[in-house]
Image (cartoon, rainbow, N blue to C red):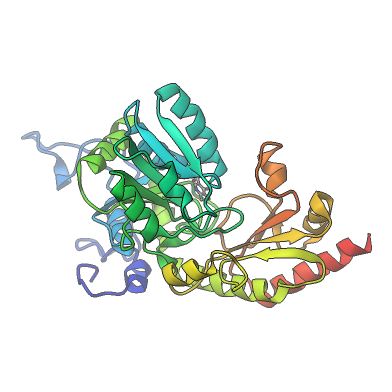
Length: 386
Ligand SMILES: *Cc1c(COP(=O)(O)O)cnc(C)c1O
């Protein structure tokens, strides 16, 4: 079934990228935890697969071919976490290479990269993602090997024009990698817009249930750089466990339903609270007032994602007061799960964080949106009584 070329992504995802096993007929995928696979008496590998699962896990091919098809790529790889996938990319660059990324980017990645680059001898320049001309100024033609962007980016949900970034990167001889964790393949197709590499923290929407850490890379071409990345996983060992792969495949089956619902609810919530007297701003790329709205309308299809931020009038104290009073939203980090989360990012990122102290980040889940709106309304009302 999944070999047919014209199937829609929703259909491919619902089937988890597989057809029932021909010999035993399992409809759900079997869990295969073995780390090693036996040879026959002629010393051939039984079952035609590799012998050791750091290099060739039988838990991966269905998930990886599904992800490659959903992203329109030539291949995909799963990793033990988003950071294991991301670090494989930077480790594949050579000392002396120059790389460029936006100032607002996943903070764990920025922190790790700045330290790694200093030790490894990579040149790094950060550009202002709010200025459309800033990326071109940061590029060093010939020296820049990789541009890494994120869109929409955390937690202001600024939108970067992926097609324009691809053109600028390629013009300087660099590859473009896109962290599409927040947009997911449901809402954005970076490879069709010119990206060379797509990254996901599979911990977020792809799995979607807050119970797996995973990372994903998808490539536009099966080229030498992709071969280097494969080597980083196989020999560096950032491999996903069999049970985690099984859960990820299970989560992927409902990806389109979950992301569609979260996007619709996030838009309803953003519209409801825009202009609310107790709020300084609602940041959501689906609102006409958002600076990235025009690009988002062009590059995101079917919705603007499940992430939004609220800026409070009472500064950090006002934000924490609201977070303290919610009843349905869970006060927790991460994003992209079935339950809605609320987080005061400035408290998490610490004093060097560029995130405004009055900002609360919301990850919208799949609950009834009216319940979520009512929860935020009661928290705002009770916070104001103090
Ligand atoms: C969580 C996250 C990462 C890191 O992924 P892990 O799975 O936590 O290692 C990278 N980018 C974005 C946008 C994320 O939200």
